[in-house]
Image: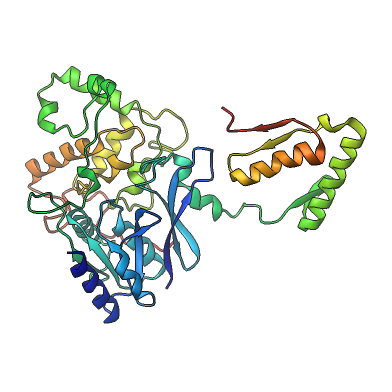
Length: 135
Length: 267
């Protein structure tokens, strides 16, 4: 019997509330607010309270999907990234770099957001970068 | 005092009295709930008793749903003990499944600290003081107010509700599989703002003879609604009318709305 209570940060929005996950035998069983966390001081919204439900949801996507003949089909990461890169490259070639915008997310880490804007500016060549937490 | 507790926990684990012991441990500067085990007995050295409070008995119930054969130990403050009494009264806990090391948490001049985050001072802002109830208000303070004034202050407090269900989720004695606050024919999930004061009064009625006055709901409320005050009043009535003291009186409360056949169901 393995039981751990794992501190983490809520992944729903940019506020960054401290949460605790109850993990029993490797399975996420519940979420609690972290009482001493400076951001939320032991309080959570309804989304934060239900973090464990989306992790365990049976409709959660576990592999990339690619639309072929009007239907989504499971594919490998190589296929998905390859297809996206090819399409982005052809759009940039045809319509110019400013035809692409990069929208990043509060659910990602600071470092991932940094990489995303670097990708937009250096790889694609556009300043069209925005973030959902730019309130 | 900590050394005493640590030695007792080690003894319970080493002598196979319990499989896991739930208490608190400092992690990254935060006192967090932690399950101590025989395999990692050296971690018991980092055990702390406070000051943060979590519903350890609720965590124990979750673990027992997966491992019904396990025996768990809990560091039990007085509120944890009352919660455990209520849970076993309502057949949610098999006798002997949970062993406790009791901890006195009441404040006293003879003690360096008291192990309860609820006792930390909490300052009410001017709006709350003007329109609602100050933190730590007592039922006597409320009853001194004229009924209309009291009602408008309660409505001010209830209208702040964001329907996060935090009060129910953190409650150590909320164990029903089906909850009136979620049932589509009763309150139902979804629409915001919640219907006030119905949402809170439904929960208050269900807390009659069940609430053990731990204050975790009030701690967890993002809108800082004085829930402990509300449920405290409900239980005052239960005590006055039925002579039943929740958490200490033996047997189930006079409100056996759930029947006597309630048993924990596997997930």
